[in-house]
Structures are given as structure tokens and as C-alpha cells.
Image (cartoon, rainbow, N blue to C red; front, side, top):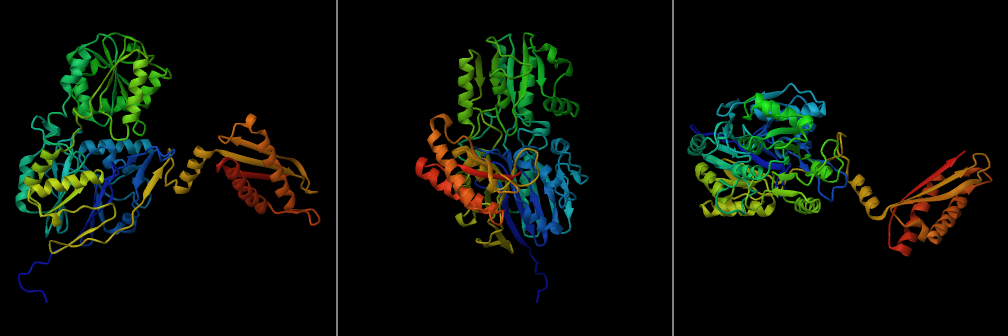
Length: 560
């Protein structure tokens, strides 16, 4: 029996469907009794092993199965790694009526994605920093933080056990004002009220000191632009609005007209100017007729899923509007990220061979807007959490983030290091379970197709890329069951036909023998399935024995 005055505390589960031990695909779930709150819904882009896959989503099946308990998605800011999955999720008819909460600019970025995908959604809820949103006994409180995009927030989930704080991506930089300013006073106020668990990003946890001022590169850009009166082709990542502002300021300071390539980037910049998120005079924006002028800055957006692709097209002469000249200057405005270093180095080699001056940000000196160790320490001191949960980053970054917290006095047993799907369970304000898991997976998206393309498709692509394909075609008389034509052998990516005539002749004989064995001329029947299986198995063993290769084998047998 409950004693008089006893507080009935909650049962809380915290876990990730994506974002742990990886860069991108952030999706963190907090369950308070029967209520489910989801913080961020990001994607990540393919790597070299994901053949033909454009981007990857966290599998949200758990959320679909518990849809009635889902209070909504809460988006910290408008970057793909944090909200890029929302368009695909809202395209799912079962999820289209779920509330999505975000600040004004975050929802503007989401609306762009929804329009590109042709998805209609009536459940977007604009929120304002420092305005509480009530959900029964629980509530959400957004707090302004500094990132490379305006209107970024951290989320505070108030429960009976104390607050659960998810920082999103942040950095402490006292020079940032307006829509980029961190409200340190509100963060300190949250910390004084009592924080049960702090979920804090880990990407720069190995970097000593503060990120600021190395996240600000205006003077570097201004210096690059001042060195030439010719055309400067500048690559930009369109969602990094603060970097765009630095570029526009530097262009204005050097009295350069700006030409924006590509309709999506044009629309984003014009919309941001109209809404007051970018400070620039539209009369200083030129058009395609100015491309051959002197003293201009040409903005070229990196493709989301294929960094540097548009610049590579220009370098190789495939761009419709821009033909590279030796007088041009190339400026790459984003430092190479993990996984892109090799491609970036090859790009710089191509520019050197083209005789073009190129400048780029140094990834070690010029940092993105993420929290380094001193920033993490400051956030921990402001929040003073009972439990600390490093999120967002490779596992080594999570470990280093945990070490930062331990140095500040948080007990090691209160530092929660998890993988996607691992659940931290709290009862009466204490961590009680460290082994429970929820099922997780990834959804692989290829092109504009909705839905997972699956591991089998990737295996087929890997086989085609590694060993090629062999197609066996044969035509049989429908009445007599005699072989009229073939078997013909067609190969792609397998062997050089002119030098392997004997092998292909042997292949024809093997196939013909298998086909004839599976034709019953007396009953005038053909066992097509047996032909296909026997040819695949026999040729597979033969090719492996002769060439140590296993191509994909497809058999086409038709009757006429």
C-alpha cells in the first residue's frame, strides 16, 4: 500500500534507434511510463560498401508498433543527420499523422524535404525556445543552443524523477548572437532544478580545449577572396547557414557579386534572406549572364549524398554553364569529413593538374560547430546530471566523452555507454537494468524508391561488381522440343572474350548437354527449373575451378 506523502515515480527507458557508434542517423527514444518521445530523426549517407545506396535511415518499426503511445518527434535543428529521415517516415501512411515539433527554421528545412519528396503533412508544430509544451504529467522545454544553423535547440524532458536533457549538436561561442545564441542562463536554471540524465554529443570529444574560435572562418574566407579579381568558385554545404553567411559577408567586403548555381540553393538563400536568417542585399546576387565576369563568387552546392560531385563535374568539363579557366580560384568551404579524405585529396590533385589555384579549410584547424572537451565540461557543469549518456559519434568518441564526465566527478557506474538498441531503464530515479534490448535495423534507400532495398540486392550488386555476370540464352521449338538456337553465352565484367574463346566454347557444350538432358522428347516436356538450377550449379563450380571466380549466372530459355 502506498504510504501517505510517498511520491509515485516513473519508469523511464532511454535508447537509440540510430546515432550510436556512427556518424548520422540520430534517433533517440525516451519512454516515460506509457509515453514515448523521439528526439531527432536523421539519416546518414552511403559509404563505399553500400553499393548504389543513396542514404540510410534508422528502422523505425518499434515506433510504428507503439504508435498510439508516441507523443511526437522533436527535432533539434535542420541538418540531415538530425532530421533527414522525417520525409521518408512521414511518407509512410502509418506515420503521417504523428506530430513533428521544431523551431521555425528547422521546419522550413523539413518543408523543403517534404516538397522534394511530394509528401503532404499537416502535423508540423512550430515551437519557440523557452516555451514549455505539456504532455500530461510530463513536459518538453526547448533551450536555444549554438550550432552552424539558426534556431538550434536542446530539449529538456521534465519528469517526476527529474529532467532528461538531450543537447543535440552544440558549441559554446560567446560571439554568436540572435538565432545562434546559446541561452546559458536557461541551461543553468535547468541544471539547478535537477537533471536525472544528460544525453550529450560526442563527435569532438577527443579534441582538447574549446571549439571556438576555430569554428569561425570569416577572416580566412575574406583573405582568399581578396587575393584575386577573377572568378572564385566556392563549394558550400547548403544547410550550414552560418558558413553561408560568412561567405556572403566576405563577398560583400571584397565588393564581389555572388552567382548562385542550382535552383535548390537559390531558393534556400532567397528564403533565408526573406526570413531574416541571412543578411545580404539581393541586388548583389547576379545570374548566369554574369558567369564570365571578373570579381565574382560562384556558389556551388555539394550534393548531399555525393560530396564534391558538382565540383568534379566542373573540373572534368561536364558542367553545362561553367568551363574552368586557369585564372579561376577554387575555394572548398567545408573541411573534409571522416570517410571523404581520400576523395578530397584526389579532387585537389585534379585541380593541381588543371593549373588552378585552390584553397580549402584545414580539418584540424578549422572546426565544425560541435562541442570539444571544454565545451562538454561546461555543459556537464551547468547540468550537473546524476547520469551521463554520451551519444552521437563513433564508439571511441562516446568513450572519450564518458572520460570527460568521469574527470568532473560523475561516478563511472553512472556513465552510460551503449550501442543502438541497448536500453537504459530507470526506476525511482535509479538505473536498474543494463541488458534489455529493442530490435534495430537499417533501411537502405536507393534513388527515389520508398522502402528498404534489402541486403540481398546489395549482395547481388557486390557479386556483379566483383565477378561480373554470365547470361546463357537458348531457344527451343515449342512443338518438337528441339534446340533451335544456342546456347549463346554473353558475359559482362567476367572475362575478356577474345582471350577466353576456349572457356566459352566449353561453357556452351556444358549448357547444351544440361539442356538436352532435361528435355523429354517422347512426352514433349521441358524441365525449365531444373535447367536453370543445373546450369547455375555446374557453371559455378566450373568457373571457380578454372578461374577462381564466381560470376552471377542467369539462364534464359524460351520456346517459340
